[in-house]
Image (cartoon, rainbow, N blue to C red; front, side):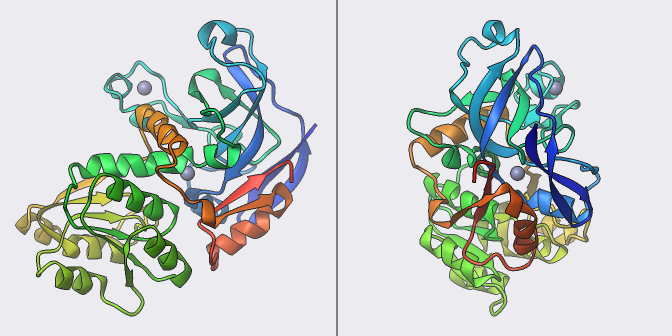
Length: 344
Ligand SMILES: [Zn+2]
Ligand SMILES: [Zn+2]
């Protein structure tokens, strides 16, 4: 038997004793070290997400130790051994469809998410397809390994943003994806990265990571970016919130011929000022998760220490998971990422 945090209904997460999963022939069994709480799971927890149906063990940002190998694993993934630390790309893909063949595995027509379509990592053990496992670089712990998934999201955003060398950029939202995207754009040589946010603690993290803060509760974010760029606007704008307001603000703050990356999924649909986008020839791109190549590269960047959230990571016991979901929905304060650790 194992402990698992089971989402049973809107706002109800309960620690339960459950049977341990078993590794099928092409799977590995992982003892979870750390598993991050993702923004998409907060909306899932509230019951606002069609993808997630209770009862469900959520958790898709994780790292842990391999404790068992399915019978085919020594053949299909001879590099995987029990005792090794791994993180796992939680987006299963078929590998054969047109999207997969183009390397866009996150757009696979048959994709399945661990922690949504099948049990996730808010538990002591999880079984996963071996092909999705990535061994952690020597010396990396499961705290850092568990950040691979959100770093992968930021990597995809930065990839779609294109060449940002010496360009001024704007990010709206200083949650984990905003803070990681800020670091990616700076790594790619952006001149200035403005970061607009209403929560003072999150804004402070953005400043510490080299962003130029815009306190969006007190200042008009669009006006501030325009004023700082001689009226031109940002070459790249990233919406890491996804509300009607932040989508509109991103359009207004983007310069002519600039690029808008839509990542936040707060609202399913909203009105956008399309005529403004036409007259400025703004290129808008959706950014969803990460390709399998982005995921592998994210792990490399974490291994090099090129990207970080470590001063603002909070480790919590699985039994405190429900409290943390509530707190993250309310005012998390000085915490960028909460990692649930079954061993605590
Ligand atoms: Zn996530
Ligand atoms: Zn596919």
